[in-house]
Amino acid sequence: MKTRMCCVALLLVAAIVAVFDRPAHADTGKIIIYRVPRVYRWPPLPPPRPPVIGWNYNNNSNNTNINSGNRINSNNQIIRNSNINSGTQINIGGGVMPRPANNQFLASGMGFSFKEPKQNAVIAWDGKEEILILSTDEENEVKDGGAVLSVLPLPGKPVSVLPASTECFDNATKLIRSKLAVVGMGEKVLTAKIGTHNIFVWKLDSADDFGNEVRAYIKKTYEDQADALITDEVEKIVKQYFDQGFRYFAFDLTFMSDEDSTKVAIAYRFESKFVYYPLVISKMGGTGETVVQLAVFTPGMLHNFSGIEPEQIKVIGGQSVDVTSDELEKVDPEIAKMMGSKPVKARIMMLEGPIDGFEKDVMAW
Image (cartoon, rainbow, N blue to C red):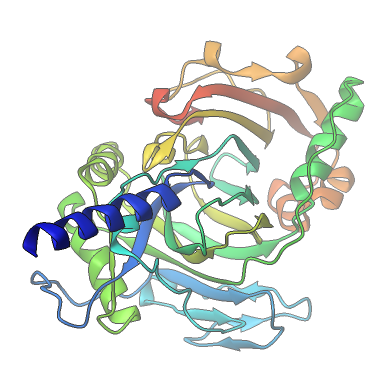
């Protein structure tokens, strides 16, 4: 009887692995959130730390609630709090938490990986601050989907987190290509809704705190019914960023549907001494080849690179172009306001290769 039960258990494991042995396409480093039984042995965990800044977005609702002194302007945009280190929590939309993965075989990493064949972003840097706008098409082949926590390291103190137009990247690249007389191929447009985004930023005191801090947040958020899969690779990558001086980490808790979908465009604004785009963080669960396209706006030319080698970066058309403030306004009003009235330099940067082959981020000035 014991032998028969063991055989049945092994067959069940094999069947579950077969179901989940397909890639999920994602944008940044991902941590899987999985359901745990009611009787579960938790390690000693600290109380979840308050966010430096955070917001909750649900694209199925226009209802907005703001706490801790922040407010909304007439365009339904966040007016940032003057003191974001007070643990501001901003709620936009509402909605329930995305449900965890239903099976622990999924969480154990058996037959499950993320792929990001395409990464697109708009970057504007004025010499002191950067606006990084991310809007990524997600293709998830995992049956029924599940909750994931995206991680985005920030090189400096966050200033604001704002919704942005999902057309921002296409508008930026069309503008630059028109000045280069370079014709670009059309992009695949996905229309399915992805649901609630729960975005917050933490300032960490130690890389050693990362795993327990995340698990404590998930434990409280899901009332002891879910945990976060913190692997050795996750810890290693976070420590690498921490050793470079990174202290701020942005998180986005959302649901990866089993249908193709487009994420809300999110504009992260933060202090930075250089143009920045994270590549190494994608190794957190990421596999396969990727193509990265960045529409980059700066006050002048970029001559210094301290991250990835400039030889690894291809500039479309081989040059930068001049863009006026009025032209930039059509790409993104917040970027235009930050960059000021003078013309700026714009270029499209492209990188490609295996995700696990990037050892450094884009850092240039």
